[in-house]
Amino acid sequence: MANVAVIGTQWGDEGKGKVVDLLTDRADCVVRFQGGNNAGHTLVVEGRKFILHLIPSGILHQGKVCMIGNGVVVDPEVLVGEMDRLEEHGVAVGPGNLVLSRYAHVIMPYHKALDLCREARKGKTKIGTTGRGIGPCYEDKASRGGVRVHDLFDERGLREKLEAVLEEKNFLFRRFFQEKGFEADEVAEKYLQHGERLKPYAGDVSRRLQDVCDKGGQVLFEGAQGTHLDIDHGTYPYVTSSSTVAGNACCGSGVGPGRIHKVAGIAKAYTTRVGEGPFPTELDDETGERIRREGGEFGSTTGRPRRCGWLDMVVVSTSKRLNGLAELMITKLDVLTGLETLKVAVAYECGPERLDSTPPEIGALEACRPVYEEFPGWEEDIGGVRDYSRLPANTRRYLEAVEEMAGIPVTLISVGPGREETILRSHPFDS
Ligand code: IMP
Image (cartoon, rainbow, N blue to C red; front, side, top):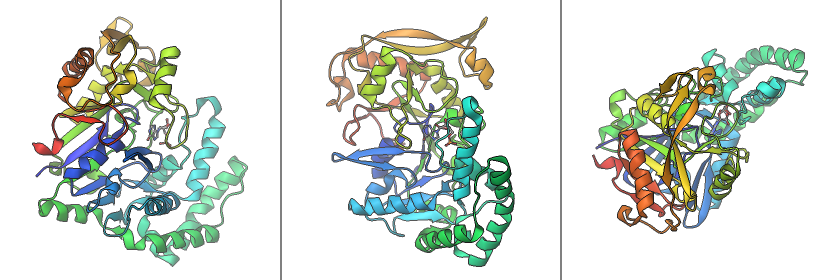
């Protein structure tokens, strides 16, 4: 029996959704523990594309339980919409296969409005958030003014809470942002309705996970965003508002650290970033454009073009330390096919210093220049390869260099968007 956490090692969009979907075959339960519908996990199964923002990527497998932990921030409209869309595609979603933590915080309409107002006001200094209200919701959680899922089942309590919260928020909207603000009654009506729809799904995720583990079941913890968007360890302030590292899988779902037996890091074969913030290996040229085109690098949540650049092993190695990675899974390797030479950042030069991990202050990171190692590319189509030994020699050379630089094995290689377009060298649930 083993429980595995899957974590993004870069700035998100590493292809965690596909990997989680694939690994779910050996899990009994998949749990999300942080973030919200700022995430967009794209899955392609039997030629059909699903984009999930909140529901764990294991939902497409029958007989598996998906859980949304207390550390997630939940927009009920998005959740209900996602449940409906899955049903329309013939994927059954019910309390038997979806559990929503009663203690998860709810993204309210004023959180979304505040996110947008703040970004608009910041102008050039904006973070480039997804505008989904994630930050303001986590702020209310920390300031003890948040609405949790169970509050949606308590009419009087919700009305009282909203009256109190909106007194302050409306002052801000009306006096500072010159916006209309929100009426507590209107918000309450709408969110009580959401509560009715979601009540059958609400439960205690921590206890449910304990039951799964006590019965010998296996749990897959699904990270969202990436390590370098972590509120503490990322490129602050250009980060998301939750802790994206493996340690938070415990806190955000209610299990002890001993319950997580292995952490697998997902890295795209190159690097992307959405929104603002430093990005040392960014390519602002034809190669970057080509990677964006070939990789379809447009945000699955906002549609924004992603910034693209070379693989940065300084970023990935820092993630290894922050998450305790035991193995690495490389995605979108096929996108690099046809490039004559591939570059990989192996260190940073920062003035007279040579660094092998990302400096925690963005000023220092912005001053860093990547030191590249070059590798010959390959022309062969690798999309149909399922056996590592059948990859072109230059592809293996690239992967082996990555493996050596990371100091951990590359156990999975994704060579296309489909579930089957994968080379699985060993399954993380195996040991
Ligand atoms: P927020 O999470 O919407 O507050 O956005 C904060 C930063 O994190 C912005 O740069 C977003 O583009 C980025 N971000 C948030 N979620 C994701 C994700 O799932 N993938 C990639 N970037 C993300």
